[in-house]
Image (cartoon, rainbow, N blue to C red; front, side):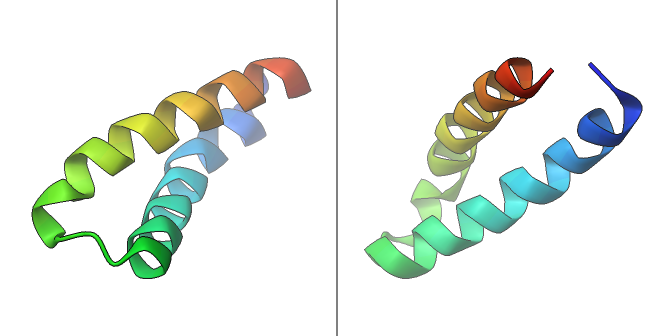
Length: 50
């Protein structure tokens, strides 16, 4: 995996988590779970890009 993709992963994950939390109006306590799910999806996507 390239350094640029690896560097961008946390930024993309946090932005996507914030987007999902706003769109779904889930309670704040759900943020860590959403972050894990989004992080997994972003990591899989990054592997495909590579």
